[in-house]
Length: 505
Ligand code: ADP
Ligand code: GLC
Image: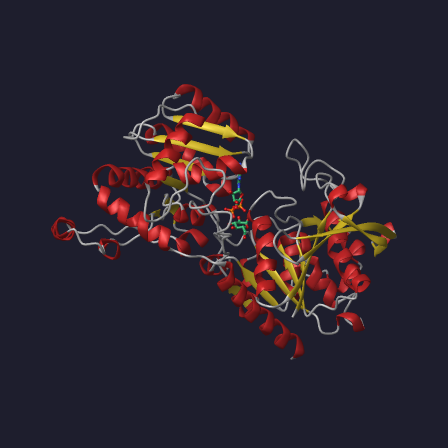
């Protein structure tokens, strides 16, 4: 199959979150299965043109009242693959410091035009390269105009006659809601401006339009595919999604185990693997040293890595914090985002320098060190479409403490303690296969409350102190889990085939 993949961020070129990880990894996995994929993304200011190949000739993109705009195109390949990435170069849209927001966190006021432009440029680029896609795969609101464009502007275009569309929702909270003038820029015709297609409260909603028009719809876990059809998680689109649920499927993201494996991780002070966790102790000491905490093996360390956004449960952590810090643990956090949270956690670090530390910023290296050096990983998200960090944690034998939602619920198995009698029998026999008897890879809670969070962290810490054998057995369970891209990529191929069949009908 020939697949066009358009995304607003792609590892290693530009990243704010997990979308970039997926956009950098899934195309490679599809290529390994024998398919031809091209990836299209903006040439943001931070992406240096000097390292890219220039594709000669400008690319014309018609933008309604703005007329035809001309972009440059640059290209390279995704690392360790032949997957071509094409960068749409248009200074007035992408020559800025941020991807979506300015330094103060405000969305750029012309984000509608910036991403309509990207969505359309990808179609034009296919023509320029003579790349006739079987599948047009769009991601999140940024490129959600593509299915609608395919069904309108490109409906009778011979070049795309065989192209079916697939839209993946990575996060329903962000929908691309704009003033209705965007209709004219998209050039799709006002008859589509209605509540069954793209209209919401007299404005346009890119994601809604994409959901209505795509041939297949996916999201990044099975649980989230169910959740987004409910008022709690649907962000107002639940009924619309329900109406299209016949074409919806949840496919869990995979993990790049070349990048995230303690046996070959180049950022950590000592490598280790499932047969020997000694190295992990050294990683813990290193982490305590870096974060200027007392170097103390006798206390558990709980790690957190992620955007400081409400979604990630930082409000719950903040409410529970003082209680957590009295449970005999150290906590380290890495993240940026909401200013109140950056300030709040910095204050806590100041107040409890012997048990809490935070690094406000973005650091891939520190993220690796936290995964390796912590005993447990905290991810109490209010909603989580998939989540990657908890899956990395499993690999590092760092037991996740999670709220049972979306991908967190699908990837983590709750600890199920044995009775004391069974435990005595098991460990006194010294059976080598005790791991199969201890159920679980982490600790889960259900209610989105600081209380539930507190008690679950306490449960995890008590287990660490008092049930060392169980804890160790769960680490083995966790490290044995696999979430490979190959499996997910095969599921995407099935979705692509469904989309093609649906388009033919
Ligand atoms: P989301 O996409 O909602 O942010 P995911 O768990 O899917 O959540 O992906 C987040 C990705 O971003 C992970 O690869 C994580 O390691 C990374 N990440 C988030 N914040 C930081 C940070 N401050 N420093 C380094 N990496 C980060
Ligand atoms: C989103 C979600 C996250 C998911 C990622 C990649 O940003 O918040 O849960 O893992 O996309 O699909």
